Image 1 (cartoon, rainbow, N blue to C red):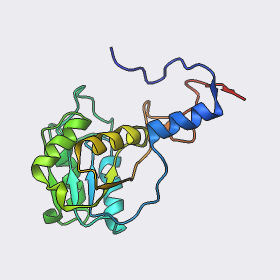
Image 2 (cartoon, one colour; image 1 turned 180 degrees about the vertical axis):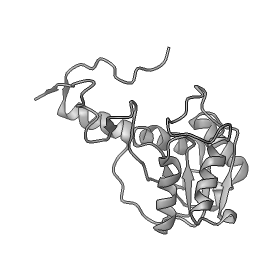
Image 3 (tube, rainbow, N blue to C red; image 1 turned 90 degrees about the vertical axis):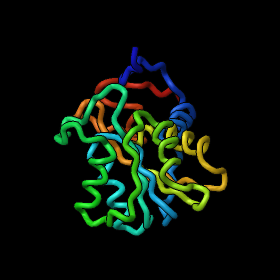
Amino acid sequence: MGIPKYPEVPSLTQKQIIDITEIVFYKEVESKKCDAIFVFGGSHPGNWLTPLDAYKKGLGDFVIVTGGGSLSNMRHPEWNYGSMTEAEVIVKNLVENGVPKEEISYETSSMYSIANVIEAKKIFDFTKISSLLFVCKSIAAGRQYRTLTKQLPTNIEFIPYPFDTSFDGQTIITRDNWMVNEKKQITCLR
């Protein structure tokens, strides 16, 4: 049984909403130039548009791309890349939009977040960097941050560079609106 996208939620206090927001979306951190850009795999266009944006802004000179596919084998509705892996599609779009291929390392076998990081360690030496900008869906930024901190050297500073997405193709879920949307109305206790 999967985790419901729109679960029944009890009434929450403002503090609980703030705490949950930081756990799920992570804290808001100012973007800055890092030694590399790490891209968690995925089939959403944000998985290549967001690191491309970061690269063009000079937030990293090297890009580490991960992703074979997902365990559920679900793809974004706009996916039209056949059987290509997530990483192959991300790299293809980065290169077509000006990122030199020699500034990209990628792996194509991981199927979930922790595997993204484990497989990336096989293709990139993380002991040689002190900062890492990481790209992922905003609703997963907290989980991705914790995954990185548990798997990579403790001296690395991790800076999120998330993008907002939708579960249903209609409602974009953000750190500011997750608690109220047309699917579920969460009551805030004062």
